[in-house]
Length: 128
Image (cartoon, rainbow, N blue to C red):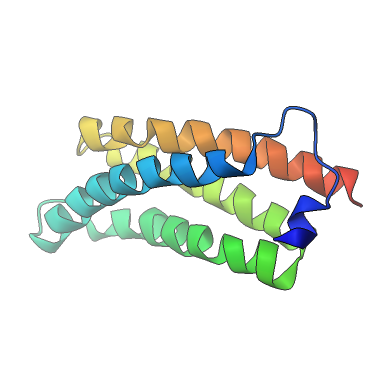
């Protein structure tokens, strides 16, 4: 974490503890929304194609931390967070016709990842 602390960041970057708080709120929301959709897919009530954006989103979300903090690769983390953001939007659009509440439940996730993407872009640019 010392490496990250020493990176140049924009003045509007949230303090480090904010990230843990926000993610501890978002993960249960994500689990409930995606879990509900996956449950309905498993019962044959929703199309299996909905799994594509969901699984891509989960996978890209999971690998962000190892890329950013393990590999210390800002550019690859930038690409990854854009994939996270894009797959949230894709998921929300794909889920909407089947479950509006599950789609809308992902809104806080979308908002936070939009902010995180702007932050990552700024950090990547400032440390090029």
